[in-house]
Length: 263
Length: 349
Ligand SMILES: Nc1ncnc2c1ncn2[C@@H]1O[C@H](COP(=O)(O)OP(=O)(O)OP(=O)(O)O)[C@@H](O)[C@H]1O
Ligand SMILES: [Mg+2]
Image (cartoon, rainbow over all chains, first blue to last red; front, side, top):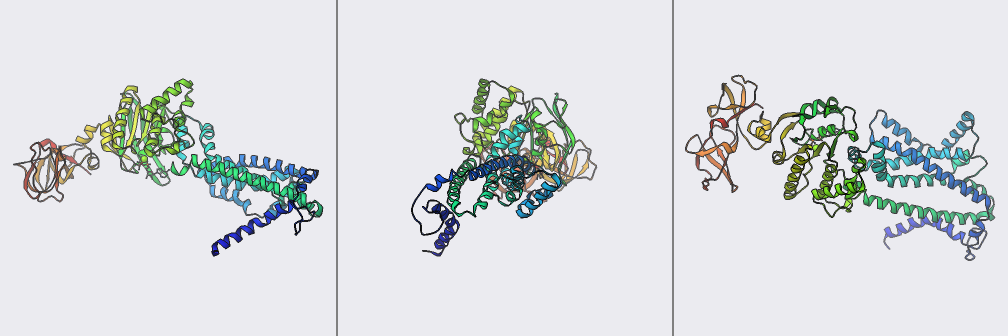
């Protein structure tokens, strides 16, 4: 084997090994995640459904993820439009400020949000405060994904639409949005995934309800619940892989039918 | 003539760069008006101002006696064929052409008929369902043309709408455009790089240079009486001989004292540096006139172009001979060049 091939194999093993291990242990007929493997079973997948608190946490995370990504993308679309379409004073500063949460450590952000929420706003901690925190951290990601898409297409398309009689909002609906759709889909996915597996902010800002990462962390003390966690983890893995594949297919199709490069 | 478009003192600055430096003229209703000029002279910028896509920095535009300041593109009686085509990539040919019709509240049948007519006009029948990304450059350009034509605007703005077409198709489309413009009485504002195209189609042509209008006239007037050297060189070819004004209707130069027509109205002082301009086809080779030798002879069938070296002139004279005699002069042969009195024009820079 050539050195490059070996390197590539090691690289893949390093990245996917632990993940595959998770799947393997979730199918192993043993309460403890250790070698040697004892035999194949699906019982962890069945047991999983009887763990009400875990399912509740999963439900919370799904709801927050969905809500957060919808809201964030809705905010990010006009922001990205303004930042790509118009020139205005202070634009670099605004751009910088919008991207800043990308580089602030989330622990710092979490603590400061906690202080603001409890000391200044006097709002009780709940899943709502978690969602608000998530919108904050998702916004720069979603905005930059949308901006890169919106920078890619010819501004004369929007001008042509106006010229043909469509006022701005209609131009947005008939031209801008369809052309930005691959970016919108990426933004929706990205927002969901960031929120879904975010731990630090959720840990600090949640009240009595848990998101899935926070719940799972709290369960590490009980080894006998681990297999169900592994089973859930494997399902999430399959689900998110499917999601990414679908998004990629949609994106490819989008690129093919409206490649800004050749028009 | 009722002016349909009135452009008054329009300037346009992009930062510190002034793309239009004060433009004032009218375009009549139903006129085929062309703008001709070198790349970067501001033609597209002016069209975009007429369309309402750009706002003039100073000055204003009225259409049908209505001030257009602040009127957005969607509420102007204009449609534009974009230089970059601006075909919507997420739509097929038919949807592109029908895009603006949706805003006109036509019935489905009316819209379908209009689209079919436009497709036929640009010779894209049978391509209705073709995706935008599967079109060639020339096909895209024709879709862009059809998309604007189908709107039947009062004023159609065309930014080099035929530049990507081959000669045959381009000539067909020129005829179609001209016929359509006549029958519908639409005012055309047409931008082109191609002087022959502008001459073929236009009622009047504006020669644009460096953000200014040099001259606006009929094709014939532009050719026969260009106002300055730049216009003369832009339209057709011109022999330019440096000279000085020596009196009313007279110039003096390396060729001695000659009579010439003063094209521009501004009176010229005696002694002013000018050019004596002569069109190649007004020059004759014969037994009288300036003596010279043939430096180059190009046989074009319907005419022969000679370059004749004349002692005292820095550049050779270009002579277009009508080839009536069928005889061709050899390189190096001695010849004499003459022209009628009214052929010489006096031009400033
Ligand atoms: N948005 C803009 N920002 C800065 N400069 C611009 C802008 N639009 C046009 N210009 C400049 O204004 C000048 C005129 O441009 P314009 O597009 O009107 O030229 P044109 O006559 O249409 O040229 P061409 O024949 O190449 O299409 C050019 O020098 C161009 O660089
Ligand atoms: Mg142009």
